[in-house]
Image (cartoon, rainbow over all chains, first blue to last red; front, top):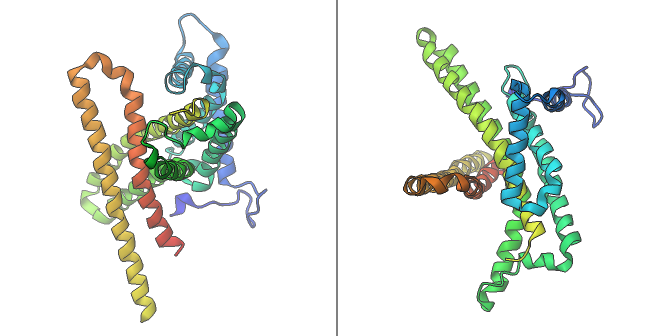
Length: 235
Length: 78
């Protein structure tokens, strides 16, 4: 589909250094997230403006989530988790603007985000706990005979994490935009009763707004869950 | 002719893997429904458990995503 195509901004072939529409929309995402936080935190009024309260709510929401899900000692990784949340949230929301490019609908983008989390969390687990981190796979509460089998299952599910983590986000974004496109296609095909699919697209768009926020939330909360496993690997 | 049959089998396989997504849908609905029935019995405890709700939904959904992945691989990689 046209809206998912990666195009070079200034024409020509695409190499790894070519500025494309992905580069453009990622830069806009970073700018928008930075603008919200920097402009929101500039005044620091007692009665907050709309921008300030939005920035404060996002900050407080993610801070509480890290503390609740990953534990109090995970708060030192809060900047990374919050950056991830703001990036994914703004990439999803900017992608909903008509004619925009949704960077998170590409598995290449989400896979890099998920692999960053996966590799850093695995490295962190070994650095903080040493070989005790392998206790994550050795379920000590299970009967002894079952433990090797469980260890194999745990190992597989551990390595499946970055796959499900990245494809969930890309799949949800891609599917939502594709459904909107299909319904918009009905509108031109139906002629006189074109307003029915137009109303459906409007409703879908509202649903997509919800999905964009929820998927950013789910991406972040899973990061927190993986972080908790790295900090406290014992079952 | 043989190539056509292989192509047909590929698309049938892709359609069959979509059933796996239906299983994930059942799982997600089950979690959300049970959360709601629990939350209505004890509304004061519900707010603290919404994070668990979303973690549960995410894990149930992951298995549907694997079937989606198999469908994608069948469509574009095989």
